[in-house]
Each structure stands twice: as structure tokens, then as C-alpha cells.
Image (tube, rainbow over all chains, first blue to last red):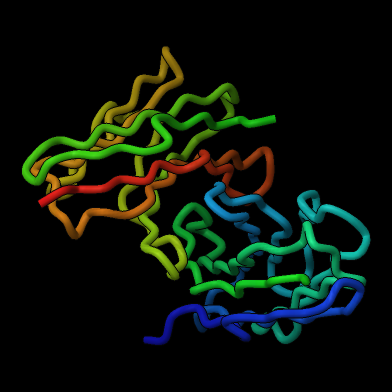
Length: 114
Length: 113
């Protein structure tokens, strides 16, 4: 079946603009995660969804970052007033709730803030 | 605070050799330790995982060794192949800390033909 998909694959924006990143998880996966990967670095947890609710938002770096999930499926990560330090690859992953360690990642969205 | 420390940052091995990547953790509440493999331009993919009640797990050429008392675990890639060239991440999960993975910093492995 289809894996996790993310769009766009690349996004170049100007400092101060808002951006929206989309994630389509694997069908039936109720758990969804957003991570950020800076160049040559590890993965930084941002937020976790269980269904449409987000019990763990602890990784969101500032109030410019928000995310929502609708219908227990598609999720959108929004970054307002982008800054250059927001430049990174944003990765989405999904899993079955009973197998949260086995996360399936999408290809990521590479965000470049000029 | 880096809860999972991974070493080395990079590794070069000859084809047929053994690649060894080490990870150490502090949080004794971690109860699941997966390894992910990431190729350039792709998202990480689950490679192999272990729970702390097991000291070793082998899948094909990939083996995880786990030392609970030392709070360390390692990935061994036997008979390394050029196609194994990728970045490898160890991770750890604690149910008590919520359903998220804490990742190590990654190891870039290059297997020379």
C-alpha cells in the first residue's frame, strides 16, 4: 500500500512569510508525528497526534509553529513569520497506536527560508 | 539535553567489513530501541529494533547488541556492502515520556568497494 506522503517536497520562502506543510499518513495509522531535521543533524521531535488530538506538543520550538490534524488523517504543520533558522527538512511519520516505536516516515519537505 | 548519544559521527569501512555504531542513553524508562536507516533525500526507514529484556537481536546482516546495565546498545553491520552506505540513527522510546522517539545524532556510514 501507499506510504506516508508529504507535500510540497521543496519549499523556498522569504523571511516573514507563512508556510504550510502537509502530511498524508498511512491509512489506518492513528498516530502521527512531526520531526525536524537540520542539515547533517539528528531528528528533533516537534509534535505527536493521537487521532485528531495532540497530547504532546512539547517539541514545538515557538508559538510560530502550530499543527492540526483533521479526520484522523491529513495533518498540516504551519510556520508563521518564518525565520532563517526554520530552514530544515520537516519529516512526518505515522504508526499504529499499539506500535508507536515502529514509525513509518515520509520523504520530508525541505524548507528554505531566504 | 541529548538523551541518546550516538558515536561515531561518521564511519568508513571496506566492502565485506564490519560497521559498528554505538549508542548510550540515560533514561532508564526507555523501553524500546529501534535503529533507522536513511538514504539521501529519503525519510528514515525502520531497520531493526530491540527491547531491553533481550541482549541481542539479529536480522540478516544486521545485529543489535544491548547492554542494559551499561545503558548502551550498538548496531553491527556484517559483511558491509556499498548499498549499506547511508546515515544510521539509533532511537529510544519511553511510554512514560509520551509516544515519541528520542533520536541519536546519526552516523554517516560509507562502504568503499
